[in-house]
Amino acid sequence: MKNYIYSTIISCAIFCSILHAQTDQQFIIPIVIVKYFPEKDGNLDKNVTRDIGGTLQFIRQKTDSVTKVVINALQEGSRYHGYKNVSSKPSLQYKIVQTYEFLEPLPTVKKDYKEVPMTDYNSIMKRIDAKEWVEKKGVKEIWIWGYDGGVIGLWESNMAGPFGDVSNSLRDPGDLPVFEKTYTVYHYNYQRGASEAVEDHIHQIEAVLNFIDGRDTTAEDKWGELLFWGKFVGSDISHKIINPRCGWAHYPPNGRQDYDWKKTEYVETDIEDWNPEGTGKKIKINCEKWNCNSLSWFIYWMQNIPGINNKIKYGNKELTNWWRFIGEFDNAMKNKIKLVN
Image (cartoon, rainbow, N blue to C red; front, side, top):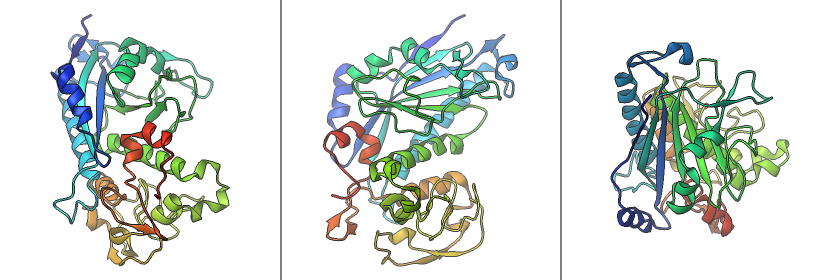
């Protein structure tokens, strides 16, 4: 069985220049792509994947196409108020530096917290020598393309590094190798599309910002007072929108239940002029603002996250560029950077 390793042609000098081009406002995210296509006679083996088949050529084209859409969405989403400011620059720039393709099933390991075998992320990281990529070559994210089919467990996002696991997972300390630098693993299901893949990133953003804001150590009845979850999202312990502000992945400002991305009911919100004090201009919106489409909602939501030169004040202090915690997590932690300067 033949496996493939191919890469964007980036020499050491060029790769280093990419990282050096990073500023304190714009952050480069080098990524490694890992694909698992259990192949049989030129097709995906449905005895393994259970719910998706098709030719190897089709699934290769699909994952390549969706990956491009995901990168574009994440970069576009990091443009602060990009929907109304055409000159707004993205805070995040993604660069694919290597792609691995394995024509075999995902490796698995039994975990007590899953009824089905769990993806063996330790095995995958060893297979691709993730330590070299992360510690020596500056890779910050590893994107895995695989399957679900109810036969395998996966985490939408998973993190490891010197500052712990801050991710949308059970945060099992042993399910990823810990290196000297932080990296995040995203696991996509190629039965689905770009919206679901981007949603993995949205939940990771939420996890990281909640962590920086102290939600993990805050009493649950105080969540509604927190800067990110209470004042930006407009939620509390219920995860519902109790105060129409900017919302979160599953709940736009007018949402009444999970995944309410097509809600036509109007609501007044300060999402486009948000500040912690709630003194921004309110507008009346419904799902037409984001074309009643989940992917468009995710991009619109991200574009309201305080980004480059946001100039938003909280009392007499200014908010930082919150994308720093996604693009430069270790540096932010070492320098004890918070959501407010």
